[in-house]
Image 1 (spheres, rainbow, N blue to C red):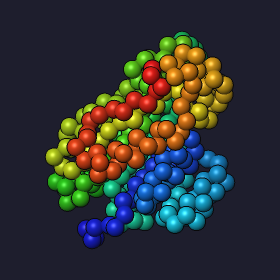
Image 2 (cartoon, rainbow, N blue to C red):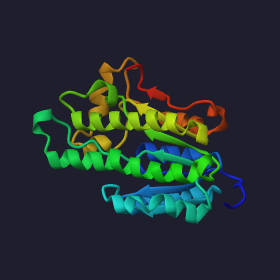
Image 3 (cartoon, rainbow, N blue to C red):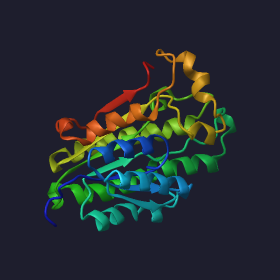
Image 4 (cartoon, rainbow, N blue to C red):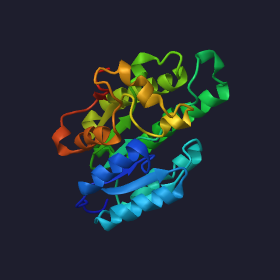
Length: 253
C-alpha cells in the first residue's frame, strides 16, 4: 500500500445529476478527491467536472451503465488507479421504473431496477470493502448507501419494485456494517423522501414533488443539498462511531 493520502478519495455513483451532483459539490468543498460515475448527458457531467476543478477539487469521470455489471466492476479499480486508494463510497445511482400500479409493472423493468439499485451496489460494495478492510491490508473507510423512504412504505400504486430494491439496499447496509465493523469499514444509509430531482420525470411524473407536497408534514419536497449534508457527515470523522444506521430525510414522513 502507498503512503496515507492527504485527502479523502470518494466514489459517487450517479454523481453528476440530482442528489449525486449535490453530494459531489458538497464533498468537493470539503477536500475530497472524487470519482463520479454517470450514464448519460455527458455535457452536464463535463460542466460539473470543469466547475469543481476550477474551485481546486480533483475530480475524475467514468461513464458506466450500472445495468451492465461487468462495466460496474470497473469503477473501484478506476478510482484506485486514479487516487491510489479509496476511502469513501456513495452508492447513489438508482432508477424507479415507471410510476403505476403493481399489476402493470413489466418483469423486465423490475429486473432492470434490481440490477441498477441492488446488484450493482452489491458488487461495488464488495470491491470497496476488499480494498478498505484493515483485515485485508486496507486502512478502513466509509460507505453510504442512498436508499429511500419508499423502502419502509412499500409505495403502493406507485412503484412497489423500487421500494423492494431500496429495502434490499437497507439490508446491505445492516449486514455489511455488522460484518465489517471490526475491519475499519463503516456502512450507513441515507433515506430521502420526495426530493426535487429528475428521477420523477424519468418515471413519467415530472410534477410528483408538487403533487405529494400536501402529504408531507413540512408541506414541501426536499432539495438535493438537504441530502448531501447527511452524506458529508457520515463520511467524516464526526461519524467515527456510527455504523449500520439510517438517516431519514423526509420532511417528517
